[in-house]
Image (cartoon, rainbow, N blue to C red; front, side, top):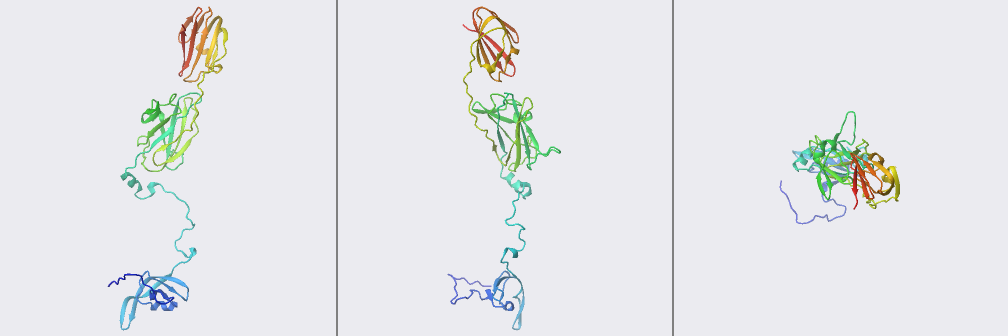
Amino acid sequence: MSTIQVGGQLQPGTVDTPLDARARVDTVSAVAEIPLPFIGMTFFVKETGKLYVVKSLKSRQIGPVVTENAAIDEYEELPRTWEELPDKPEIFPPEDHAHTTGEITGLDEALAEAGARPATIALPVPRDADNENVTLVVDFSTTGEFIEEPVNYTRVKMSDSYEKMRVFCNDSWEPCPGPSLGIPYQQSTVEFTLDQELFPGYVSGNKYYARFCWVDASGNASDWQGFSFRTDVAIVAPVIPEEDDTLTIADNASVSGAITLDYLNGEVQNLTLTADATLSRDSIANVPFGRALIATVSLSGHTLTVNATGTYTATGNKTYIVTAINFGELNIIVTETV
């Protein structure tokens, strides 16, 4: 079949004249007379006011010769309204839907070939109100559900996997020091990168759901916080104003006998003995973890006996500094001033 090319546009010279004479007929009966039709051809019937498309062809006798595929066999009306559309969705616009990467053929393989990088999870370390150490628990799920019976999620615990974690401290990242974090790591950030040991079956680039909480040394857990991810995640803790570091100083006090000290009365306490006195570790209260209570004691000729892991006795007219420091166990330091 030869092809005729034209160098410009074609335009009929009369009004209401189709460029292709086959594109419009007056009546349905005239459809059979459309010359040299082709499958996929559209035509308009003035009698019905509708547009049709040719679906199949048949032979036609032209003079003494029968020519194959020379006449329209089957044709159908083109839909004009939403109701007439075939195979349309029941709801329009279609409802939202979601698929896992495993349900999309070849996506997991494509991600692997593209070298999808394992996700790094960075989470804020809270400050414990009682200054206890805290440990991290993170659960991972493919569905967003965390079912206990049977368990359908993977749990990562700092107590088991701290060697795979790092914590930001002293202006740099360093290995997690142990199964829990205390001062000075609280209010910092801990991070770890997922792998098959931490999360068996983990696929880089897949979408997962997670929740995490912190548990203190007494077993008290924080509320769960949740997030979803495909790549790296960084949960930022709210900025907490720095505490006022101004020392609270108690009024001078005259004491004798068994001395009791309470951190809530002041971080610095000035005492003058009016008679012999004793101070024991059990009589010092409410010193927070990582903090110290400082007491200056003027003997005024009397004797001060301090009972801790051992016994220390001070006599004379000197002034001593007694420091009680809490690092999980209360330690007492007695220093003579000069």
